[in-house]
Amino acid sequence: MKNPKIAFVSLNDPADPQTWSGIPYSILTHLRRADADVEVIRPLNRKIRYLLSPNWAKSKLMKRAYHIEREPLVTASYARQIEKQMRGRRFDAIFSLETFLISKLDRSEPITSWCDATWDLMVDYYYSNPTRAFRKRASLNEQRALDRAQHAVYASEWAAESAKKYYHVPDKKLAVIPFGANLEIQHDRDDIQNFVSARSRESCTLLFLGVDWRRKGGQIAVETARQLNLRGLKTQLIVAGCDVPGEKPDFVRELGFISKRTEEGRARISELLRTSSFLIFPTRAECAGIVLSEASAFGLPIITTDTGGIATYVSQEMNGIRLPLIAGAEVYADHILRIFRDRTTYDAMAFAGWDEYSRRLNWPSAVSSLLSLF
Image (cartoon, rainbow, N blue to C red; front, side):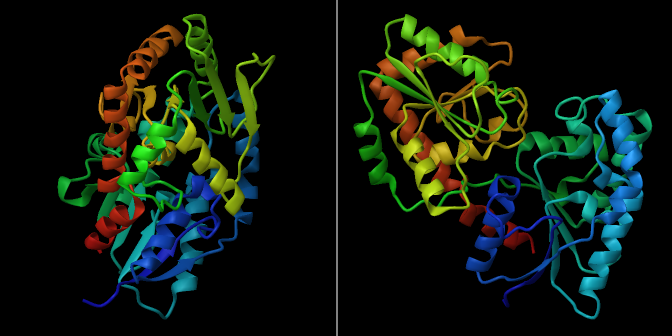
């Protein structure tokens, strides 16, 4: 079978590791490593958005969610630009991570979308209180895109179920392919034992890795570390990716934002995942946390919330613990103490994480599944 010729339609540059947490970059990289003939269709002119800036300003003033990219005028402009760039050429498939780019696309090639959520699923989860009129327009845009797509791929069962519920996407069009780890993983299962053995059995290091302190539940992470220290387990909380607001306790170590654009930054993140005791991820809303795949790749047990698409990435009592959204720092501390003090359980979680990563939470496997659809 010949290598497929794929048009990768993107609003932002997928060759930039910083775009959308590096997800487009990883997909593009591994498509090409699999010898797919990929052409990126971009950049797209975004000036049309200025015509709708009054709508954006009004929504901002009213504190209502608004995404200009989902307006019919904007989606039509993007479709025309994509069609112009593709004119006179044929592809085996069109691929996009953004449904608003394909909703009005007039091409005969089969289209595959790969998303972490649907629009209606995100309303009042990520997006607060959009106007009724805009919500209807955005929902219609999503419906058209999914009707147009030959394959609707989602990064979690949670998201795929929403496509069935809100947009009546048939099972034959749906596929669930989790996102992988956005780091180059050079180690193997034997190395996981070395990582785990090198971690302290006397003191605990919690790693909080994220750019949105509030949404990712940063304050719960701080209070969990405080609880562990009060209970006699010397604990340090490392915060990477964002700033800690207010006065920082002496057990908090703030590293700030670490860029994956540089080799030094990627190496630093890998070191943190390798040497920490737990990833603490008490997120309030999450579609598909890439850091969960990355933690598993380093045999790092995960303590997180049972929300959004997390269940696809964290199997309960295997590579981590999923707690209810209402769980406070005391509950997080209970589970961390239990696992930390039982090295059999800790080691089992570490190896289960690696097994989950090597089996399904990696980009080569994910892109291979994607290519099988094409």
